[in-house]
Image (cartoon, rainbow, N blue to C red; front, side, top):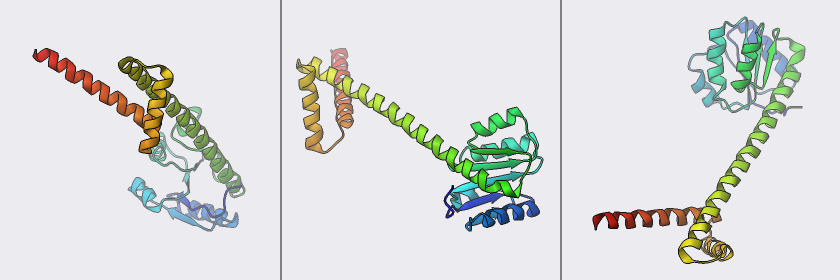
Length: 205
C-alpha cells in the first residue's frame, strides 16, 4: 500500500468531481492533498508544488485535451494516475508512452481510489527500478569500452602488456583519488591531442 504521507496533487477542472476525489483520498488516509482546477501554466505550477504523485481527472476529454495533458505528464517524473470517462486503444497507448502509471477508463469511482493510487505508485517504482538498472548496465558497458581503449593506447605507445597498462591506470586512479574510467578518458584525450599536434607539425613541414 502506498505511503499515506504522499503529497498528492489533484488536477480537475470540475469542482464537484475534484471535491469527490479529494474526499475519497482523505477517507483513504491521504491528508496531504492539493487540488488545481485550472490547467493554465500547469508545468510551472506542478514544478512549484513538487508533489509525490499526480492524479488527473478528465471528464469526457477530447483528443486534443488528452494530447495536451500527455505533454504535461511526460515531464513529470512521478507516479501519475489518470481518470477518464471514455477512451480507446490508441489513447491508452499514448498514455503509457506519456508516463501515466494508471489509466482508468469508465470514470471516477470513490471505492477505486485507494487501489488506483497503489497501482500507480507500484508501477512507477517498478519502471524506475528497471530504468535505473538499464542505465547502470549501459554506463558500465560504456566505461568498460573507455577503459579497454585507454589500455590499448598505453600498450601501443609504451610497448607494455595489457596487465601492465591496467596497473598503471589503476595506480594513477588510486593516487589521484579518481575513478578508473576518468583516468582512462584522460589518457584517451591526451593521446588524441598529441596525435593531432603531431599531424599539424607534419603538415607545417
